[in-house]
Image (cartoon, rainbow, N blue to C red; front, side, top):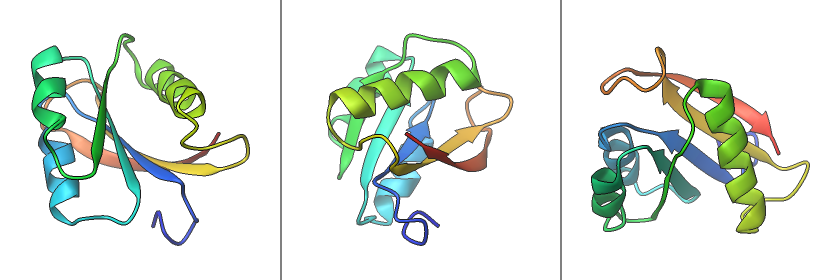
Length: 106
C-alpha cells in the first residue's frame, strides 16, 4: 500500500517492538520509522534492519501521529504534502493489538 500511494515512510507505533520486527523482516524499500514509549524497546529496535526508532512522549493516537509528523519534518524524511503510512493498534498503546493502517499527508 505504501508504494502505491508513493509514501515517503512507514510509521509504526509499537509498545513491544513486535510490529517493527515483523515489518523489518520483509525488508521494505521504504524508511521504517518506529515510535515506542519504552526506552528498552527503542534500544532493541536500534539494531533492527532499516528501522529508525524514536521515543514517543505522548499518549493517544492522534497526539502520537502529530508527534511522528513533527519528527519526520524535523529530520527531513518528508516534507509538507508528502504521504506517510501509519501502522498502529486499536486500542492504542496495548501490546499485541496492531490492527490499523492509515495514509496521512504531512
